[in-house]
Amino acid sequence: MNPQKIYILGIESSCDDTSAAILCNGKVLSNVVASQKIHEQYGGVVPELASRAHQQNIVPVIDQAIKRANINKEDLNGIAFTRGPGLMGSLLVGTSFAKSLALALDIPLIDVNHMQAHILAHFIDEEDFEKPEFPFLAMTISGGHTQIVKVNQYFDMEVIGQTIDDAVGEAFDKSAKILGLPYPGGPLIDKHAQNGNPKAFPFPKPKVGDLDFSFSGLKTAVLYFIQKKVKENSNFIEENLEDICASLQYTIINILMDKLKKASKQTGIKSIAIGGGVSANSGIRKALKDGEHKYGWKTFIPKFEYTTDNAAMIGIVGYLKYLEKDFTDMSVVAKARIKF
Ligand code: KG4
Ligand code: ZN
Image (cartoon, rainbow, N blue to C red; front, side, top):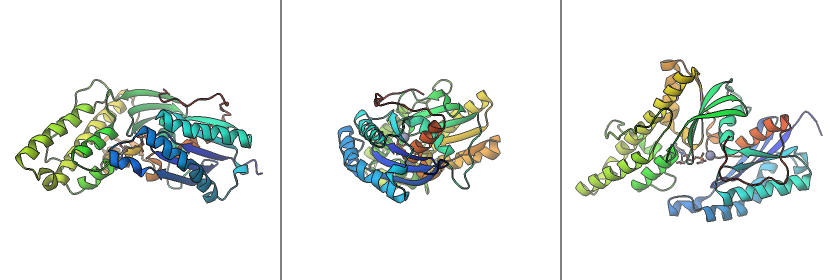
């Protein structure tokens, strides 16, 4: 075995995506994601069903990842897995599998914080993608979290702002549900917003202190607005879907950008990275890029496949921790809530 080559298997199972990736020295050789379609009919993730689907998917997904990387499992140097935060039943599947495989292969086991992974995904070795220099600000926007993090070093991170209620992904998904769109509605709002007028319907922006966010009021405002309009015209949603989505997306982007501008001003940091599923949103990507000439920012937007939940981001954290020999032992347990 070539000692210069460090092969890490990353395993992600925190929510409703079962994913496995193989990285060699920080470069992705394979990144397999099995998304669970079963939740669509329920309009949200059903934890028990997610856990069961992970159990069905985990072996074939890992098998595929190893095959696509063109290696043997005996080539692996370490196994990294998502310890949390996430759904307990889902985390348990990845954690137990990672522990068993590491034990069987007698290689190091590395625990990974899912939220740190969304940020450190920027350090995956990719052609044409520059890595941020420290310190930088990272805005993690997903279905479960909305945070602004000051990243001083790989594992020295400080949450300087966060949501006090719903996550931004929930604001997208719950609003989409009100509009009768299937789960997860975020990408569909993005799609319908493309041809709509963002100023057609003004939605309220919440008043929350400092760098924190709140999205529950927006969801309620959308509900009341739609109920009122549908009473006046039962075809209101169909006739105005593009404008409603564009207006909603415009409001959400403004909320995010306002806080990001404030965070940059307060910290004096102009390197800004985004991560998490909502960073796939085309409007947010554009607003961030616009910040480059408007505010002199340097922005970092990850490759599309590394924004939503994936194991490559778990693998890169695994590699960085492997270099520091930061391993865990067999007593490690999954944790639904963890801080940085
Ligand atoms: O990071 P992620 O895959 O899972 C969590 O850890 O939550 O994020 C999923 C979230 C969902 O709320 C989904 O609707 C949202 O990301 N999302 C989007 C877009 N693509 C995914 N929201 C808005 N626009 C998109 N293009
Ligand atoms: Zn996530």
